[in-house]
Image 1 (tube, rainbow, N blue to C red):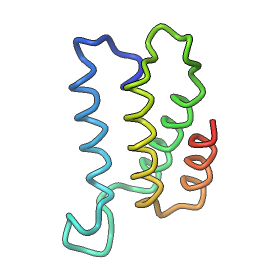
Image 2 (cartoon, one colour):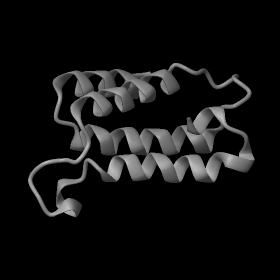
Image 3 (tube, helix red, strand yellow):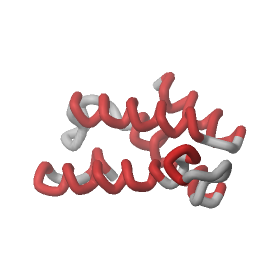
Length: 95
């Protein structure tokens, strides 16, 4: 989502990604479980992998966006509960 919007909407897209990831932060939630269902965690991981597959020459890809997505993928990897999410994110980070 962040890499596919125009500059006009990029800030809002980044905020939305950060909000989704906050739902996986057990420390912020004050409990030992995340609010986000596993299926949505997996969907987020697949989205990061899809974004990682976009090459630098794509017109919607900027270095700033790529750095933001790497940082958020690392955050999601640290908070993920599913082996599939973890594997998908590791693959995304290797791209």
